[in-house]
Length: 128
Image (cartoon, rainbow, N blue to C red):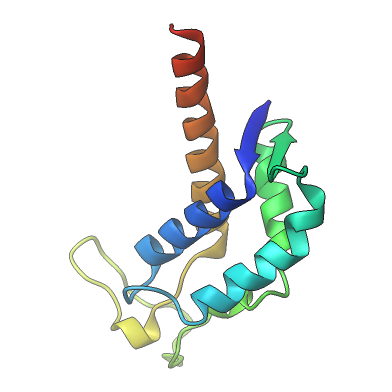
């Protein structure tokens, strides 16, 4: 089981979206988060908490919740390169306007962040 709060998940979405963005933050980050909060608030308890079976369960819910929120636009470059493939290496990549956020990686990173935070908290709570 993973226990997470609504704002904890929103914060992880913002953190990983900014970390993966070719800019400081992706376009419409605040709009995506507002839509996310409005859509999912009823699925959390009155204190803003929800239990998930495991990390994959959380990742599936995240994908369902974030679709149709403006999130999908982050997967498109501002200026398409026109090429079927774009060369990227650890030493460089496309200019920021030709880059995008890998949404699958973003969902995975958010779910792993929440799962790791939950595990750390359980260690603190149990004192072991």
